[in-house]
Image (cartoon, rainbow, N blue to C red; front, side):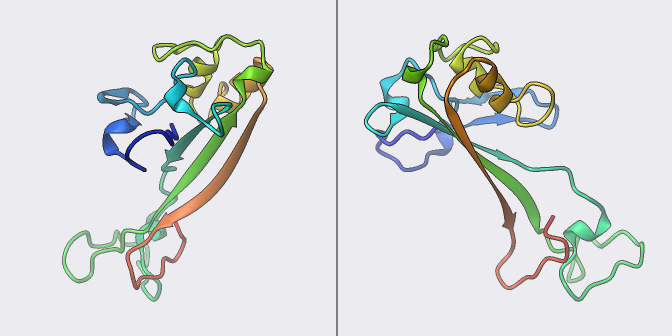
Length: 162
């Protein structure tokens, strides 16, 4: 959750993290926005903004190679000077909501359902029920922006960008 009233621009202690099975890590569960907490609002206390970063599945053997290399259908080395370059793509989503322009229930930090704004923030980014589809079903005014990023070591050019 973007919390402009916090003393830190970013804190690793204020995130939520899911493992590869989409299970919430219990010690990393402080990032979801809570519409009942005034500190979770931006823009003069009217808008809630939550950021989500998703690492998509790797798309094949070339996804970890630097430019000018060729695997010739052989698994790349994982150690030493011939190790594959770790270029990773991830997608960032920024969803902003104006709860006051909706009659939807706010919910609270423990809400996980699709009947409240707080519960919508805890939905996945892909699949049948997403953050956006949940907010739309509740008629909550929202805006989602999506951007793809590449985590790329300095001086390396990724072949596929994945």
